[in-house]
Length: 469
Image (cartoon, rainbow, N blue to C red; front, side, top):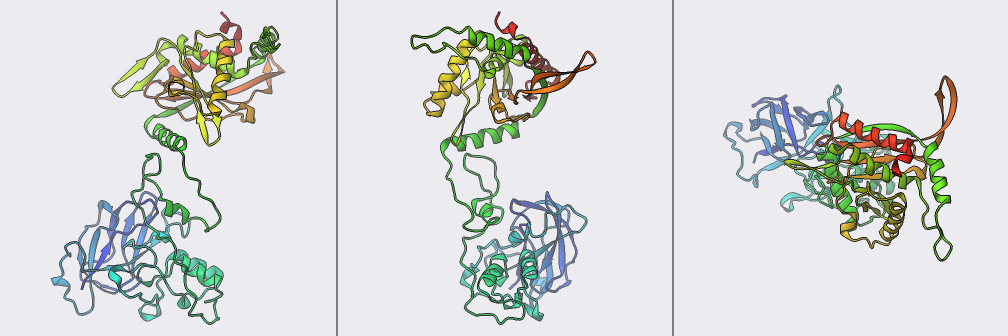
């Protein structure tokens, strides 16, 4: 019965690999531990070791072949007594044995850290502890005294002084894997020079899968599966927090935004001295309601929203969004404002921000923020918009970049206002300033257009009286 050699999964996310080179040719005798091929992934080139012995009877995938799916049959090995020339690739592969192969890093490549790929270096992808076709569990001890173990298991065993020959393997074909070594350590067995206790067995873990085409919650592109992520951490060291609809939507939309919208970033420093003086004057002049409370209390963020709205109308070609085969350009500015809530955020939109007064924007934002935190906003109040403002200045953040919220084409990241020393007329001067970074969708705005937009914003912030007329 021939032994199948399959394309191995060399990393948690690997779905395909390039068969770079065969290091053995048809008719060569294969011994356990022989390097038979080199496989290229997007991260490294790996040498693949054979575990079973026999004769390389047939190469089914030629070297240089790209994008070979994981688990695809790439070669056949004839066992002792079989005629290599008579072997044919099995139909469906049900009757053939599966040959485990063990990867090892090529030294001159940018491989992941030692052990990073080890748990996934299997061909048959069977769950740990599972045996194909109900076969009896084989021993980890190979012919000639060789112990079949993953590179990570070997490294841990060496570090902890564990005798691998005394550890019972629960991996494919009896291979010793990380959990087996850890179980032996916890049971006090298999220490170098100590007798192994036959009752010490590895716990029955959840099945570990290699490189599935998993789609995370929210429809984001394929990534690590839940079992793979858990495999990186010690059991009991974390709690699972199920995703609600909001977090799923945020994950989906912003992942798509970073993959689809080509972002570029423009940063300016805005002086705030004139704005702070005007803000103080306007707040002091605010009328009172029947309860004696001010009719409005302007924040720096209210000025930022207004300035962004006016800047969009002063640079009308930037007041637009991408719509597949065309650009939609708007007559008025619609500015979203990020409001953080437990477990996520809302971005309510100030409609016609260019036309509204600072006091109207201030009161509208207070209403939006209160209802956002109570999760009582209507969809039409947080959908759409051309741009958004994300302000982390209250947390002391000086500078950051923000992810564009589709279908918008820009987002402004606002840092904290602070006193800074600058040189003015040849002498040092202390000013109050904040750093703002505009993220732009390059499909809608080119560099010069984005620069024109953020320059118009800076001009309004530094000359705030222009927002009152």
